[in-house]
Amino acid sequence: DNAASGMAVNDDCKLKFLELKAKQTYRFVVFKIEEKLKHVIVEKLEEPNQSYEDFTASLRTDVCRYVVHDLARC
Image (tube, rainbow, N blue to C red; front, top):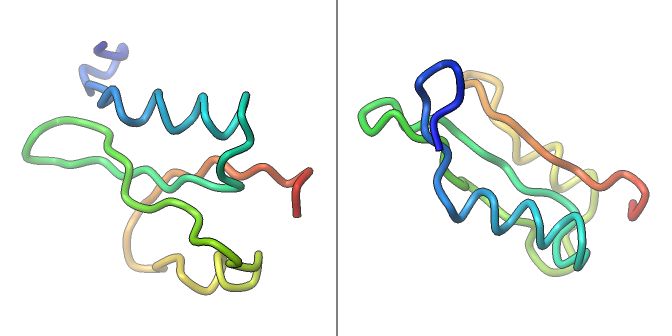
């Protein structure tokens, strides 16, 4: 699928989002734009036993990322 921006969203992104939303498999999913491929891809998933503090500390400040986080489960 291409959004209005012309950026495709990898099928794995949709799958991981639905797993977070419906199955509550993860508390967060980090997405990034793969510039060369013009795709949005999954960069990172919640690790078992990872705290919210671990999650926020793992985010880079020098690059743009998109995060879906289930705050209700924190």
